[in-house]
Image (cartoon, rainbow over all chains, first blue to last red):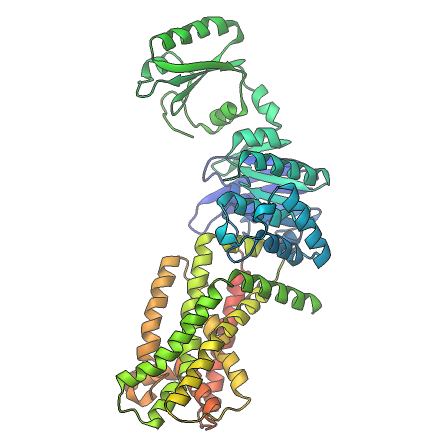
Length: 311
Length: 246
């Protein structure tokens, strides 16, 4: 059980990276932390793991005040950092096994668990190659195995699937779920809204250092009043101003425009989109139920009719 | 205590495996430096006498240890800082002092081939014999730990990696030309001699030379005290910096 209460972190230069964050996460729960760059996600997990000292507030993990005792935090939590773990010179097998031993496992158990992880993530063909010869994705998967080789109360995974191929992403999430089923709390830090939606039990959105929303992925979608989303993809080089001016609540994401549509207006709006397509203003369109991505972008204020920002 | 040794040997293994690609290259550079250092002297001073050669050659271990500790160590740490690798290392349930000790061990042993080679080639080439005593072991350890701890201090007190690289490049110049490691202190201006009475370089070289030649000098005790003070201050400072949460 993780209990974070009124956590604030202000750096020496005066910048407040976390502001009054309160959050409880249960054992066995997969909790996703979403937020744009600079939202304070890494600052939050670095305090959890005892790398940073909070300015105020408390963090209690399994009844232990880890602000007062950061060494306990490192025994209870295991971190996969966003940056690559330095494994030049080591093979994945050596790196995973040694990480397990440093985390207190005996040689036999560490070796057994290493072989099991390599097999489950289908890393056998790279297991004996040195780190400098591995692709970014294999290094990232090795880092994941190094993080979860030994049992921990909390696993913190910061962008664990960057550079990883789709098939092994699926295997990684399967392993994460198996670990969570064993009672380990998982904190997933990510920018990938789709993965967060599929893989987490609950989500928190950090923005400008504050935890502005938390709940199940479904609860984010339910809070949106509109029933459907009409997605228009612009023809390359076409100016979207004409379309967006008619849509007060449209969200612009590069070449994509997301327009909320009431369920009763769907036929009328599809016909309108079809006309746009005939006039070659848009390349294609689709109508979908509201997604977490759309809800997330509205919450953190990315996009918007006057804002042509790409996520 | 058992846990300390367990952690120490596992971290030593971790560091050795990480550096196993670099260590052979490092050994080659050390061998070339050792040979170049001694043979190159013959080009700088063609009429070199045996006494001067002895002085120069017995300065080589201190030169190599300070180069490794105060130039190579901070440069490797700067690289680790840029790659973010300390985030992972410091998130492990390990004592940071144990990590420091394991790293100091790696750097101590990395410098040994160059030292042994420089002394062997130097004494053969310039035809003199060294008179080593057991004291060489603790003195080499003391100089190595002091130089590497100072290197650690440079790397952890300066936040930007590029500045660490610039400072260490400057140090090469300072150690090679303006530190009385390979030439007598008296050749420097008086003010610089006074500076070197406080800095560790001259005293490191003095201790090392005495333990290699068997000639004890009156200044040895003082040198031992000064170098030990530098070692203690740098080790304690680095330990505090490493354990401090930001």
